[in-house]
Amino acid sequence: MRESFKDSREFDLRGLLITCLIQSRLACFQQEICNMKMRLPFMLFVVLALLIASPLQAQQLTFKTSADLSVGAEMWEDYGSSLQGKSVAVVANHTSFVGDLHLVDYLLEKQVKVVRVFAPEHGFRGKADAGEKVESGKDAKTGLPIISLYGSHKKPTEEDLSGIDVVIFDIQDVGARFYTYISTMTYVMEACAEQGKQVLILDRPNPNGFYVDGPVLEEAHESFVGVLPIPVVHAMTVAELAQMINGEGWLEGGSKCDLQVVKCKGYTHRDVYVLPIKPSPNLPTANSILLYPSLCFFEGTSFSVGRGTDHPFEVFGHPNATIGSFVFVPAPNEGSKHPPHNGVPCVGWDLTQVGGKRVKEKQTLILDWILDAYESFPNKESFFLKNGFFEKLAGTKTLRAQIIAQKSADEIRASWQEGLTSFKAKRKKYLLYPDFE
Image (cartoon, rainbow, N blue to C red):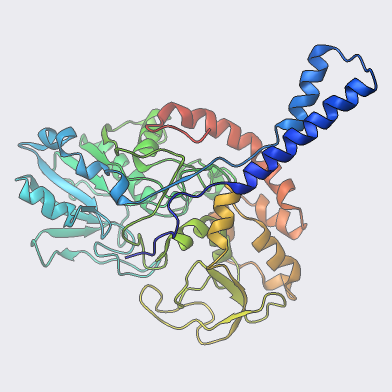
């Protein structure tokens, strides 16, 4: 089970202080105008007042757990009747729970004819390493065949879908483009569109669904860690994203699948959802999930993000780093059999206490960490991996060039705005829940 945030309802004291200071400043400004007997036109005064009194502030967030809402799989009354008399396949993993029951067991109890299970990256039980091939097999408990979608093929074949009427997708995502569960969902939708099968998405909250940020994927850099033209942080649930994939014609040949979605109850995009089950071996805490979109860029560099430690995606460092005072030593463990810099002390930063808090406050990707790491690294030629994985994660070659040119975080973020503005306009059409803006 993952750690819980200590306070489920934070108050933005800093925002309150800023508001008070602004009000005081505005009052002084208005008095100064009177004293000087200035005669500004009314509209000019309003504009000046707004410029002073309206700095951009991060929105207030609400923390929620599974006790505060219902996921799509729990809304049986919204989808149960549509499964009667149908042969069903389930795309699921260890996060696919309905209360205390796994979705497969839950459906079988409801007399649904489940005939097959598809497993994504990390496998049906969620134990495999990142990038590790997942083998097909049989579920020990139910005897159902498990077909891997992270082994010899990533898209269901005609044989895989033979005899199937409905494919249910129910997997907890974390809201980052390079987290591959949404790539699996896209390929499943595409196969079902081609073979005339229905897709049923049982929705789950997005724990990073309270902001949109990062470069939009460019077609030249498509891969399994980026199959859709969306930003790194897209702030959409899997059901919202599935509707967008269908609506924007992003499946092969612009095809559309027969899609049904089941909403969560009690969720909004102003919520930070604390997951009850870790979504993959190297995202074990709420803090690591919040940090993942910002720190994953390091996976395209020679730095470690703590794989092989007790705090993956909560620390980062390198044996030759020259700034940072935290030292960690990667070693093989569950989810990281061969961690980068295995057995070698790495010097860097510990973000276990402050990292996720900073993401919640800024509600953006935190670029300073990778910018500072590059700027201080003694051998810049070896900072980025030579295999082009950084470009796959970023979805563009521009970000590497900007880091090398030592552009500021503000300059880099400004270069994303045109793409983000276009994406946000499209995104609005497919939202199922109240938005953060």
